[in-house]
Amino acid sequence: MKKYINRAIATLCLMGVCVSFTGCEIKTDTPLIGKVAGLSKDEAFRVGENICSVDELKIVLMNMQNEYKKDFGGSVDWEQKMGEDTVGDFIMEKAQNNISVIYSMAALAKKNGITVTESEKKKIAKAASDYVATLNQNEIAYTKTSTDVVEKVYTNYYLADKLYKRNTDAVSDSISDEDARVIAIRRIFIDTSKTDSKTAIEELNHVKKQVENGYQDFLVQANKLSDKKEVELNLKKNEAKQPYELAAFELNDDEIGSVVEQNDGVYLVQCVSTYVEGATQKNKEQIIVDNKIKNFSAMYDKFIKDNGNDINKNAIEEIKLSNDKKVANTELFVYYNTLLEEEE
Image 1 (tube, rainbow, N blue to C red):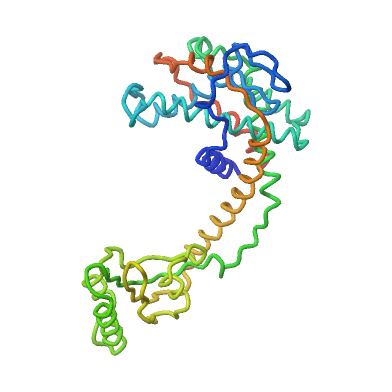
Image 2 (cartoon, rainbow, N blue to C red):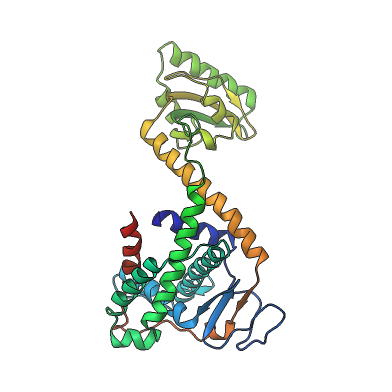
């Protein structure tokens, strides 16, 4: 389930429905305006009734920064350019987007009556205490964290997990092999911008006749004639849109179809296998995950649009990445994941 929620987070961030850290500027200590409560200097953002403190954001940021350092051998130039931004800017934005999605999901969970039980609170407190015990003095000084701060982070992640699981479990897993079927094909494509359509069709019909009569090998001819380098490929039925792809699913093993004319050119397809078992099963699993994420994303998107948020841009801009080599802990989610492992 953890890998599914990570995919959901990535999808929601790409959709742009997480709390925007680059939107309108809200200054520190904003006053109470209507139903929108202002944020104090130690609060980073609010979504619905859920508030994320600066310290909560920093503990997630430290963990993510150090994970990247590990991936790159322990040393990263945070000022190195990535387009218009720096690597450091990228890490900051990624951490902010990640935690904003989680805290938004937790706010939605609370709105839907999902809570953390007393038993779960004890497990969260234990995991938080165990994690804080791994921090050295430099890491504590940088994050200003405490067991209470980590408990809040873990609680929000836990509520997000519970919400995601409850809503995605309600989505049917019943996808048929036919709906997810993957076939293996060979194809010859002739670009009709380079030659006239009539000549291309005649050439492919000649190839079809030669192969069917045993005078030529389809793959040899495909490698020789095709204007597309990829001549052997798998097709997923749920993704088949082009006329030649749809026609390919009507073929039997080793059968060559009729020449198909499209806007980009003409195609001749040979079906190698009408059912690629391993690829079909993998595709079925992916369709189920995609359906669950799509269903959840629609609900999440509506919640974000219907609920106000407040962002303390001043406080967020004061947060800096650590250059201290002794600030290197990456255990935040190692201890959090123990909560999920106990449920499996």
